[in-house]
Length: 208
Image (tube, rainbow, N blue to C red; front, side, top):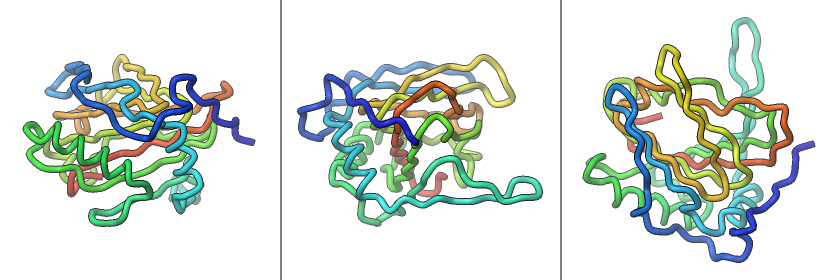
């Protein structure tokens, strides 16, 4: 049985809203990649987590692995460009990110992918978002984490020392520049008791 969410003491009685982005901290990586991080950007994140758990039509996918079909170890929902978001604050978040990063990205964020990590057995393997333009062009992927913190790891493509970000309770991370094609990221499995987490990933058109 999944471990229940334990709310943040700082996030229990706030309205759900995004804050200013002027506190973003950037870390420059290799090969033109960079990462921006802003802890607690989305206020009321635990309340939003509850809304999304109940309000999103989550899908359990299966995929081919070698000679058999296996369950994808997380629940998914993708919102195409123009599709109605499951909560108005996600529109606010996407608009704020589009405005803040427009000078670098030169286009808005358009789609939203949601992943529900129910417990430590749910995960995503090392990868870059290289389906579409991310394989050849610099781009951005902005991720908001709600629910309990989980580790997101980043490492250079081909191997190397990894960076670790513990993300949850409204934290924001943005991977930009060449990050999707020169670095990889993952949410590893863990045997430690961890609460559930939802990640909301905003991407420009043609990036998956």
